[in-house]
Each structure stands twice: as structure tokens, then as C-alpha cells.
Image 1 (tube, rainbow, N blue to C red):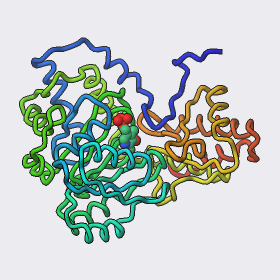
Image 2 (image 1 turned 180 degrees about the vertical axis):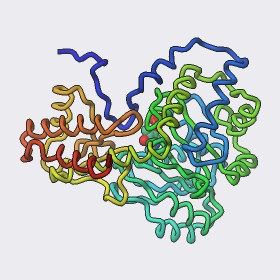
Image 3 (image 1 turned 135 degrees about the vertical axis):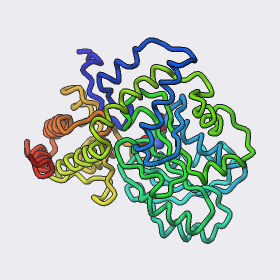
Length: 386
Ligand SMILES: *Cc1c(COP(=O)(O)O)cnc(C)c1O
């Protein structure tokens, strides 16, 4: 039977499902440059700031999350500059390749997949490499479900170097407190299609005052991703190039939903989803990729040591139309990843945990029906008191 996409439940770590009001906002009438477009543009940054945890403006550009990261690179580095990329999984690797493509002298400090970057190691590295101009870290490493200690990393970068500290916030911003100003992150970027529960196609990025100064001095050629253009135009109520109007409208709707729920409540909901999901996997004796201390509120990774993960994901998709992701890069075929970010509620967690439990029984894994879902229910009851 061919499944209608209307029935497909996306639990990938992006793109993520859209709330109905966000979907509807995409169909609002088109507007051209003028007061209507200005309203769509200027209403975003004030609503994005508390989500990023910054007083700085947040530039919104057409493109995916990678566009926000490329904006970071081209605005604070000149070709040949030394940069340090903290690689904790697939997305760190991609970042290192992006820096190489921009002809930077790339240093890589790699951590075992499933572990978080170690601020002590970064400190030692910076002490012995005094010319590093920028340090890149993945806030939530989507390939493993690990959160890196951004506050501690930012602190060592600023204490032991003059480098700017750049955070890839794709898959974290919107689901986890960004705290950009408080933690002294210089550049925080993300995309629309993960925790921001907006269709793919927008990148958002904020620069600290330190990064803004560097961006003024950098001489490399840049045009579409010139940060200064976005900020200058934003002050005029404009965007430097024709913005993706339907996406701006849907972003406005999703930001309204987040503020209606309350940003702190949004973050607490993500933490609860992670706790419920992790409780089920622990009950099933399936090892999680991240420790309790480093687990991401937005995505859970689990290792398939004694079952066929592709078979499990196929069964859950066929029987329940729930799409769960497998591993990336060297973890392909060895793990699964559940995105519980953006438009995802505890009811949704009960749904995918229950479906996974049936799937595990179907593929012959020795678990008891009901034990995982019960563990998740207990987490819910102990967290959400009436
Ligand atoms: C998804 C993701 C990206 C890539 O984002 P695109 O929107 O596909 O460009 C980069 N970094 C992280 C951490 C991600 O989760």
C-alpha cells in the first residue's frame, strides 16, 4: 500500500513537522518591497533575540542552516587564516570541510563520537597554537545527540586566545537555551527546519560585538553572505536581497507559537521529551550514544549493538508511518536517531516510543511489551505534576 504523505509522522532530526498555523502562514498573499514586506522583516529579530539569548540583531537569510555557518566563516576569516574546528561527529566534519573549501588553514581537534568536546584539550591546543583566529564548535552534534559544553568552551577560547568562538546551533537553537551573550559565544547560527519548526530554506545568525568588529576588518570577498549588508538593511526595515516571503511569514507564526508557550517552557518541554525517550531505551537495555550529562534535549541517539536497526526503522515506518533516522557517516547502519524537536509533544513521544516497542518485538529483540512505554510514562508523571 502506498502511504499518503499526510500520514507520515516525521521524527527525523530535521526537517521537522510543521504546526498548522505555520503551514497556513506560508500561503499568505505575496508582498513586494514596501511597508508590508518591512513588517514581515522587522518583526522577526525581536522575537528571535530571546531564543538566541542575545541583545544583538539576528540576521535572517535565504538558504539552509549551512548558509548561516558559511556566513560565519566568510565574515570573520581571511583565506589562509588558522582556525580550529572541534569535531565531535558528522556535523563537525562538515564544518571542517567548509573551512577547507574557504582555503583556511584548518586544525581539527577530534573527539570520539558520542563524547563531548573537552575544554581542557581546547585550552592546551590554543596555548600551543597562538595564531588561531576562530574556533568552531557544534552546539548539538546531531549525528550523536551530544551537547557540547558551549559555555566552558567559550570561556577557554576567550581566556587563551583572541579567536572568535563560533557555534553551529542548527538542531539546538529553539529547543535548548542559546544564552549567546551570557556564555560569550561570538557567532550563533541555525536553520529554520529543525527546532524552529519552520519549513527548510532560512538561515539565522547573530554576531557578538567582537565578531562584528572582526567582520568590519575582514577583507575577503563576500556578497550574498555579507553580514554587514544584512544588518545595515535590517536597520532600514529591509533585506539586502529579495527575502523568501512565505518562509518569513511561517517563521513569524512559529515564533508566535514559541512565545505563546513561553521560551522557558519550550526548553523544558524538549528536556522532558529527551528524558522520556531515554528512559524507554534504558529500560530496553539499548545503549544511548550520549551520557545523561551530555544528552541533547532535541535528539536522542541509540546504538543498535544486537539488532538490525534498518529492519527496525523499516518496520516502524511500514506499520505506523513513523519515520525515524538512522546513523550518519561512519555510524550508518549502527544506530538510530529520533528527532524530538520543534513541533513535538509528550503525546508524540508516547506514540513513537510505543511504536518502537512493537517494532523491537517484531524484529525479535528480547524486551517485554509495555516496559519502555511505562518508563516514559513514569518520567512524565514525575516531571509534570498537577
Ligand atoms: C542539520 C544540521 C546542519 C546542516 O543544516 P542544513 O540546514 O542542512 O544546511 C548543520 N549542523 C547541524 C548541527 C545540523 O543538525
